[in-house]
Length: 322
Image (cartoon, rainbow, N blue to C red; front, side):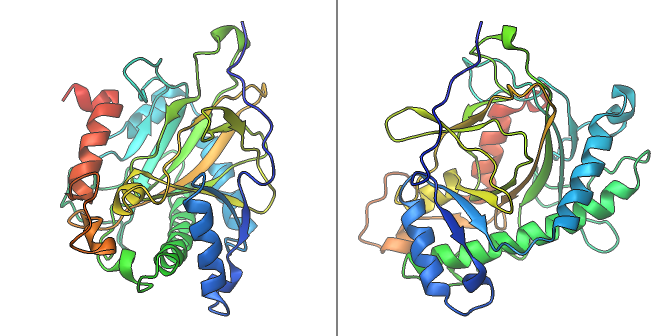
C-alpha cells in the first residue's frame, strides 16, 4: 500500500510575499497588488515579514507538544465543548461523507479578555478550556493568537486594497470576531493505512482566512487548477496563508478557496499552529457590497455566524450527537 501522492511544487505556483511594507505602511499598495494576484490564482500564499517572533512560535509549539503527548485521560479533562473549545481526539473530524475520519488531534481556543472571559453570543463561541495539568499553555497560546490575529488583520487590509476598496472594508465588524486558533497534531501515518487515509482529508477551509504556521516536517498538499495535488513544503521564516470559503463567497469567486489535505509520511510527529480569522457573527457576507447592487452573485448573502455553524455541524462528530 502507498501514501496519497503529490507532485513537487513549482516555485511559481505558490508565491512568497513579503508583507513588511503592508505592516509598516511604507508601500501597502504594492503588497496588496501581489496578494490580489495570488488570491485570484491558487489562493495559497507563503508570507514572509509577518512579524511574529520565533520565540512566540517556539513557546506555543513546545507546549502544544507537551499537551498532545499527555495521557488521554488528562486530555479528556478539556474535551471539546459544545461551543467548540478544547480537545478533539483523533477521529473527531471528517471532511467529507465519503472520506475516512481524520487522524489528527486538535486543541481549539478563541479570544478572551484579561480575566479569561469570552462573550457567549453564538454557538461557536464560549469559554476557553485550559488544561490544569499544563497551566503555561494558556499564556503561550493567547500570545500566539494575538500575534497571528494581527497578521490576519494586516492581510485583510491588503485584500481590501487589492480589490480597490477602503482598507477597513473587511474589518468593519470585527470587534467581536469568531476567530479561533488551534494546535493541530498529526501522528506519524503508517504506509499500510493506504492512499485514502489522511491526517486531514481533502477540504476547503470554512471561514474567511487561514494563517498556518507549519513545522519542518511537511505533509501539506494543495490541489491545483488541473486537479493535481502539489506538495506545499515548509519554507523557513514563512507562514502559509490561504483564502477560505467565506472570502471566496464574499468576492463571488474572484478569490479562490482551494482544496488541500495533509499526508504525514515523514515517520515523525507533525504540529501546525492555525489561526482561522472570521469577523463578528452578524457580519453579512454579501458580494454586492463589493461589486455593487447590479451585480448578480452566484450565492446569496449569508451571515458569517450562520455559515460557520452549518459547516461545523456537518464536519465534527461531536456536534452530531447533541
